[in-house]
Amino acid sequence: MTIIEPHLADDGVTLVSPPAPRTALFWDGTHWRVPRVDDHGRVQVRGEDQLFSYQGIMTNESTGVISGANGYRASGSPPAGQVWVVTTIVARDFTSPLTEMRFVNAHNASLIEIWADLKAFAANERGVWSGHTIIDTGDAIRAYFNGGLVGDTTTIWLTGYRMTVEV
Image (cartoon, rainbow, N blue to C red; front, top):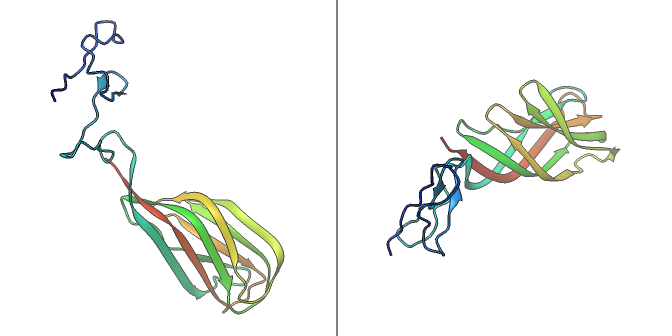
């Protein structure tokens, strides 16, 4: 099958040589273009003209001593060239009962609260959030443990998926 590359008239909008009726087109801002296809006729969706591409499943666990009384535990951070789309956060203080648990997206110098539960948490009781938040290289998700004591063992688990930045 021969595909004729469409082009525009001088008005920049009218197609002079439109392609076959079943040929998919996309507008790149200045031209109508035919999408790229692989050797099997499948449209390629990774790469050029896209911001991110799916890379794989992401899981991250950080366990250790709390940052201080009423402190936090931070997750890991995506490596350069990736962003993590976080869809589930689970955290717990294994040692002390809590009065509140909060999850924040720590981006640059900003702490954006994404979940808080003001209630009595028993020691080792989980706080769970499901949703959609994104972290970049240098960012982290923090779980704050109000009522936690110095020396408490805490953990934070993230699940979601990794996206690569297209350049």
